[in-house]
Length: 205
Ligand code: UDP
Ligand code: MG
View 1 (cartoon, rainbow, N blue to C red):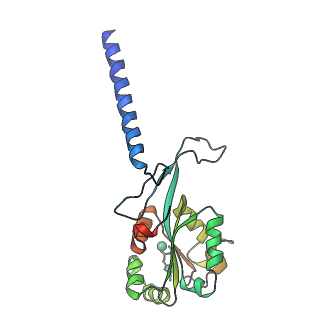
View 2: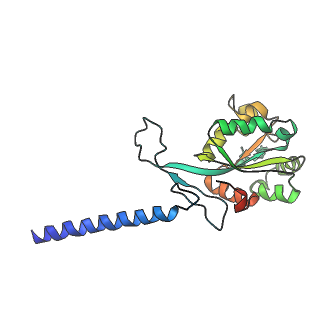
View 3: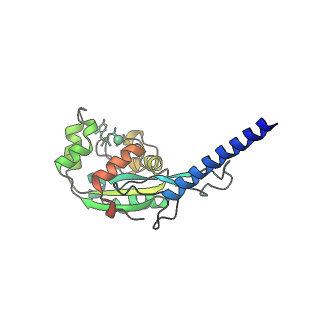
């Protein structure tokens, strides 16, 4: 009997400690300018985290936290040249993504070459760098629930011939290279790409 009481007390203590630890980490994630349960790493510009209570009505578990992310978007030279900047931004905003940062610039060969270095051994790399530096681009940080995936859905497939109707690439791209928009392909890539183009004080809550 004594053993059972001791065991119960021990398990209650473990549960309490686990709960306290969780509560502490949530508090640490809050910041004065940012009341949600997420934070920006002070040494980097990118952040990712969760906001609770945002699940749609009818979803199975309303307590499940929703993933709020940032992703990098580039409106490429072909779309900028053809005056599609406003239409493209409107599609992001209408889908619930928020523009947290934005700049228009003409990339140097070095910037474009480094940004796409993952493709440096691919046959299309020289033409891609040439294209990306041919005219100005508009670079943005988009923020929202599942922003990385959502942006990729709005963009459509790399090859506009294979992009679903209604996607940006189906509507605005000229070819597989001149394909209107860029979007990060994972949260990890998003972090690197955002830090490549933006300083922390250029990204707004
Ligand atoms: N690209 C190209 N030819 C190809 C594949 C890609 O010119 O056969 C260009 C295109 O502009 C594409 C970019 O390289 O957007 C990066 O390729 P990736 O496979 O990462 O496609 P994305 O992530 O942009 O859909
Ligand atoms: Mg890619």
